[in-house]
Structures are given as structure tokens and as C-alpha cells.
Length: 238
Image (cartoon, rainbow, N blue to C red; front, top):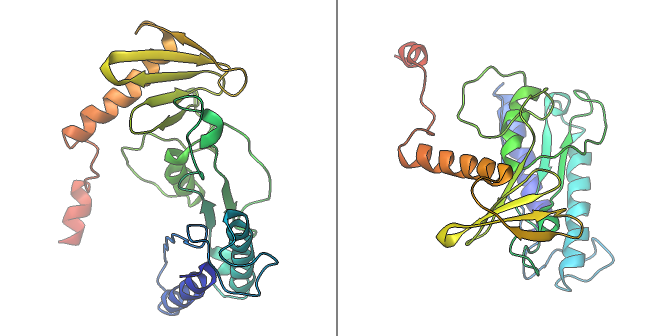
């Protein structure tokens, strides 16, 4: 399904919810920027099926058309639009976890609700949900590991990355890597010369990485990360 077809369907769903005075949360997974990279003819100056470059350009075209149509809707002024990638085109490289290959775009658009600006602070996908709930002004209890990027936080920022073999924690400069059979390494200047050093569990960055992943594994295996309704909410529904 071409992205523009998906966006047209989205507008219909949003219109229907708005007509019922029902707030909506719509999550879309676009597909045109995936093999075989096909899209409707005549949209851009690169033929359909010619490769990723054309698919990316078509994706931009479809997003622009979608936002132009959404601007004419009565629900537009009160709606947040969030565009974020789930992954990059590829994360393989000369290193086990090449940090630069994990960088993805995040675009939040709501011209009536937030002033335009760029923010280059260290962040990752786990920060998206708490940030959006903060923008919505929602009061909530959660088991999020991420943080509200627009709210001051005393904890140092970090990015958790990984693949099927290695787990990493990037602090904006250095990268700690945890590998099978107890392997522990640090890549200093991970976005630059990336010098690898074998370390022990006493290394501060490695200890921090272990704390994140081990806490998450412990909580997940014991069902402690699942959201549970507060007692008063359950009583209210009854």
C-alpha cells in the first residue's frame, strides 16, 4: 500500500472520530520506503522501483501531501503529528555497534501548540512516549525507562542500542558494549575515532549499562513492567 493511500485512510478515520467528538490516537507504519520500493507513477522525478533514493523522496512527497490535507481539517489545530523511524536502512559495519548507523529522525509537528525549533540533545526511542505525554499535559504512572526530553532531568542522558548479539549504552561520547559470555568493552569517542578497550565490570559506563539491561530483564521476567490500573480506576469502572 502506497503511503499516500495510507494517509488518505488516516484522514477518514480522524474525521470519523472527530465527528463523534472522540479524541484519537492513530499509529501508522508506512511501507513505501521498503522493498520493492514501488509507488504510484508521476509523483516524483525518480521512477518507481528504482531503489531506496526514490522511495525516500516519495515518502517525503506523501508526508507533505498528508500535512497539506490535514491543515484543512477542523481537528488540525489540536493534533500532534509525530514522524519517527523504527530503524535505519542498516546497522552493520566494521564495529559490532556502530553508533552512527543507529541515528534516526524524529519530527514533532503541531504549529498551533509548539514553536518550531531544533533540539540536538541525546535521546532515543524510549524517550518518545514520556515526551509526548508531557506535551499533552497528561498525569500518569508508568514503568518507562525513558524520560521527558522537554523536562529537566538530573539523570545523565543515554541511548540504548543493540542487535542480536550485543547490547550497548552510549552516553554521547563513549559506548559500553555487553557481549555474550560476559564480554565487556568500551569504545571511546564512539562517533569519532572509536578506540576499543576491553574493560572489567568496575568501569563506570559498563556498570551503568549492566544496571539498565539487568533491571529491565529482572522486571520483565517477573511481570513488574506491565502497567496495572490503579485501584481507584478499577473501582470507577465498576
